[in-house]
Length: 174
Ligand SMILES: Cc1cc2nc3c(=O)[nH]c(=O)nc-3n(C[C@H](O)[C@H](O)[C@H](O)COP(=O)(O)O)c2cc1C
Image 1 (cartoon, protein in one colour):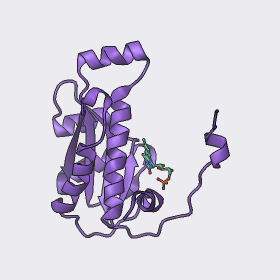
Image 2 (cartoon, rainbow, N blue to C red):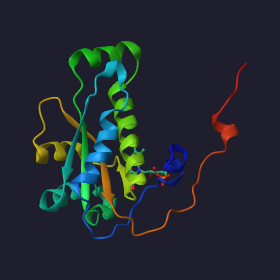
Image 3 (cartoon, helix red, strand yellow):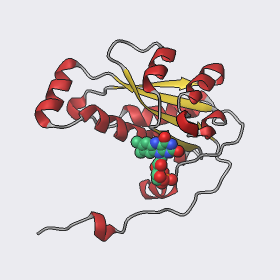
């Protein structure tokens, strides 16, 4: 699958078949995330692949106010954490940027595009009670849950895409 096709075919999948996704496939997605670019090549991310009982507990932490019920059905939840160093936080302040979040987003999209190529459905989940997930995982000091990716075989079709027109988002300056 070429890059354009992967970008076009990826969608937020919120209905999954019960079939598990083997670690061999998850590893291929993590490999694409692993080689993603990051500010100063810091690679501030970690990926925790969860299934079963642990996954069920994490799913509950995405469901505040009735959201994200589909995480109960997704066979795999991948928790993505960042652990920026103090020097990196200082750089963020000076530059008025949040580089680790930018890094994380790029890596997560690489993961999702590879999953698409492999015929898997994904949904990036930001509505997460992150501190609770940190506790469940026992993350290191300074390491924070930022996003969760649900992964599974899609049990739904890709819906029509709603996007702004290119004229609204792109300006060509000469
Ligand atoms: C940072 C981020 C957080 C998101 N959080 C959630 C979420 O908590 N629950 C959910 O169902 N979708 C979530 N989404 C998916 C978006 O709703 C989705 O990408 C958007 O509506 C466009 O649809 P598409 O992914 O199918 O193209 C999130 C996406 C991003 C990038």
